Image (tube, rainbow, N blue to C red; front, top):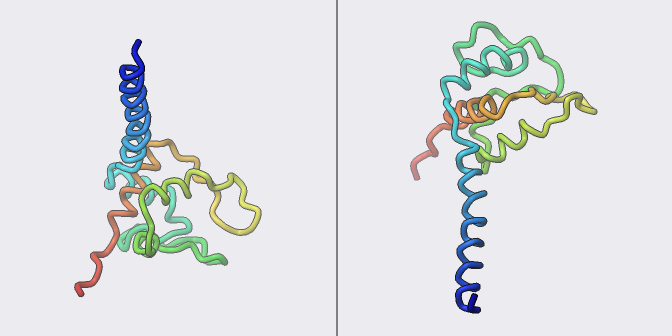
Length: 126
């Protein structure tokens, strides 16, 4: 194999390796918001306000306050990938009062993140 051919082959392999993870990361944050809402109403309403029309108020009223999903969605600089990562790496038993890992499948994480991100309000017109 000539040096030019080797250089081209190396560039092709490198470009495949480079684009693969980016595409995987993009796909990892796309979910079904309706499924995420349904799951969140079942699993998260004990502590969070998931939706204005959820069947009951959160039971947890202590400190720290569990933020409403709409407030989470509207945090500055929050991305779907960052939210998904945050939920995935929560400890099973927090050292201080806080949220424990909800132990969700990849599909469930994607769906809940899609629901939360879908609650974002449009930025104010300038």
